[in-house]
Length: 404
Image (cartoon, rainbow, N blue to C red; front, side, top):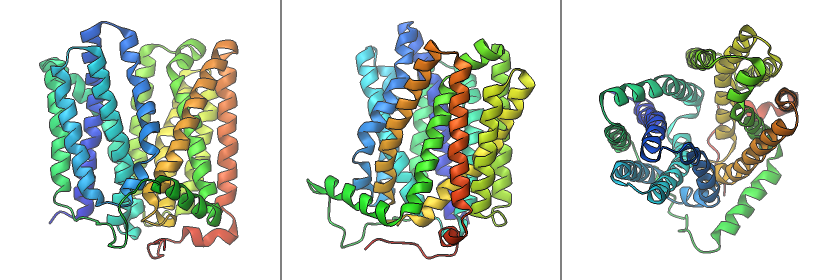
């Protein structure tokens, strides 16, 4: 009999592969439709804007509903919206549809964290998160290749319709899993509850400062990394002097490193403590970015990217498992969404700052400063994790928390 966690991984995996196939096919479809690079570039603005709008209130809904039903509903809506895209010929309507898709995806991501936190046993979370990271890495490698194959044998429209089917399959798999209904005492969302939820998260943050410190350090590190990644192509080709072929090879190497990292964490999940995952992950990811920022050869960049690919799984698995274990399951939707709102704002700020300074200052200087800041944040996080009086936050046999 297939276990719940295996079914959940399969559902999320199909959805993840669908996301990467969609990413490639929609770019090709939009460019064929408009012939405009600017129109394609507009796709990258839609996601952050939708995320800002959705995360403002999504958590308040997630913590009050049967999350599984909403996950199934979002998969169905995504399938419908994706299926409509090839039938639309006007750019404004396509953008409107894509914005709707981005909204639903942002909700799905927050709801998925809440659902898996409640359905996956605490002693299985590290292994589950490692396998989920492994699936994401595999989707990163295989998804675009699969999209390319579909585009060779079919039109972009047909490829998009096949992608829509993947979301339906993901939702059907979720139908076989149990519901996690809201408690009978949980009131329905009312006008004014958003402010109350903000205060609830704020109160939790004040009384659980260590948990929030680690979480904030983690999302700041991720935001800096994303900002550096946004300048990756320009930096490697204009500063380091690599070719487009070199860059494609580096991306493949990073993906392979991520797959190997995911396999390692999944295989040794019971032997690797949360502290070991966090310390080794953030240490070597920081080292990888420092090597990348100071690289002057293909070999040096390759070593940096291998470290990033392999140890990103360690840091990501440790970070996700840590806050799943320390944030009450009936608050995690609001916690993730509201802090995610701040994360989105910080990401946009960092991307703009590094992009702007890269125009007025040498780009290598901007990347090195960002890498040093990332290393500084990682050191603070590692020192905080290793404090002997914080052992209770890293126990993996504690009972599931719930707010009163």
